[in-house]
Image 1 (cartoon, rainbow, N blue to C red):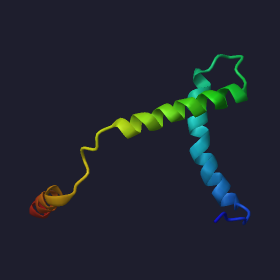
Image 2: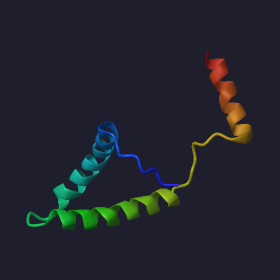
Image 3: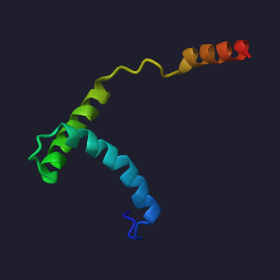
Length: 79
């Protein structure tokens, strides 16, 4: 179900705080004559590539099962 309530200024500010640093990373590397639309198009493709890279990374530091218990025991022994 879609929420039809208007966004609050705080929600927009939080989204802006996440978006613009990412935009700036891409925009700084674009040619001088690149438009904002060009930057957004490249940003979309770079973000897809980053998501694919994240999906292919092996998860090595995720405690579960007996490894979780071993990690908890080590933390308790250190205290």
